[in-house]
Length: 311
Image (cartoon, rainbow, N blue to C red):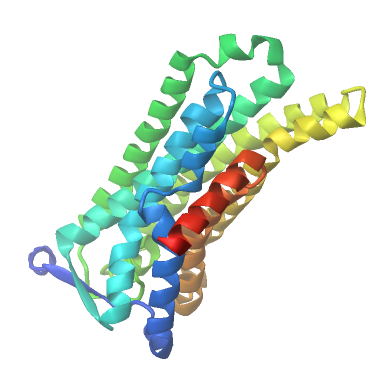
């Protein structure tokens, strides 16, 4: 397709979950009911922040606040179109709208990857150098780590979006429920080898670099924990980072599966279900993983459910 034909493209068609058409109404109901607390501002991490009794802990009052913000925004980029797509079998999305959806999806997702790495560093300092924790993890350092996460998200989002949408398209039907990278590669004209390489190279930077920083932090943390004199102190130290470790495994594991593999291994039905996991299910579970370890948070959640049931 020529460049002239490419510039004439004004919209794409999202096929959504066409393979599961009979289950659309069920999926729609389940997602609306289960995600309401997140999208209505009742995010469990917010309750966690309110219930903490240690106002000097930057992780709970700063990092978790930004993690909550990123996850709500991340799901908000995907969920409205996905729910609409379940009601309308084939839904149009403008060329500009598709590009914006891809950018914000990557921006929030990559920023979260780097924020998780910053949180791993926070746990490293808290466990390996607790006496200097408040000096090292001061407000200025925390702000710079968060800003750096947003900057990395912006760079990756712009690179992927500009390269993808400046290429000529030979098709309009996106076999997905949002403007994901892999389905759009299927629509590009000609040889897409360089585009595939670009996806993997950027994914290595956006996923593997922060993941290696997390691994390095936890190697040091584990070494410090094993040197602690009592089993009780070791258990207490490990419990302070166990939630973060579970979230890291879910987030980086799912992202690596999606982006660190060649185009030849793509399978639209499987990829759509897996995308559903890392775009909806994982962000939905993350605040629960962080919060439910806190007894005060459990009490706050019980009050929230009672309020929702009886109002």
